[in-house]
Length: 83
Length: 189
Image (cartoon, rainbow over all chains, first blue to last red):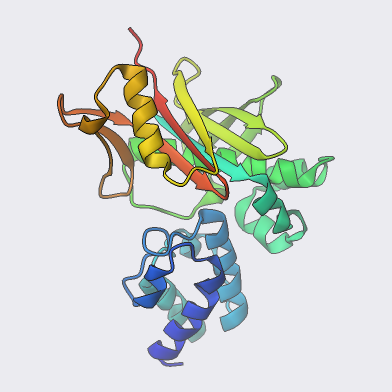
């Protein structure tokens, strides 16, 4: 799966939880889920669960701990999909 | 150090997290899962435990000074045999929790020890809580609101800054739904 494809799927996943819509207009690798999109932390756990479903992977606690930006999520997805 | 977390019950309960096995396993230890499943009011227990973890996380992040993390399972809650008190452990640190559950919100305050007292202010349906808080804070401390601002450090941790004296006071804020809660430590004289 291309990086572009992963990022566009991620954008769809986070959409329902975003509290700051300006952050979505400029959605890129550097986008920070808490700071730029103001997703609350309980919903960030929902994002992790939705990513597991969408990409058919399992995200362990250590990986979840560091999933705070689009870039973090992208590399976790790529790593887990390669296994 | 201090931290707080407020949950707007109307929004939180609508997500039906107590029926979401996968969410529960990502967030809660086996012991905490048991507390939830054996509770008469599973939603309240679940969100109370969540707010304790969040409040303790904020206090701990202030002390350790780390970048944000999503590690709720590392925070282990223990309810104490007194109403409204609990303890949260993360690695070798312990935080003392004081909580309030009403039918509209659940609020947890974490401090390093039971002797730290905090001032708390909860705003309801207030569009500009920051200005309201600065006004209330200044009034309480006899300061000019024009000199007071709230700024975040590189990790996103907020402080109250007094331009005049360059005084820096920790403040913890939590916003969910219709509620915004602010707490700051009271200086012991």
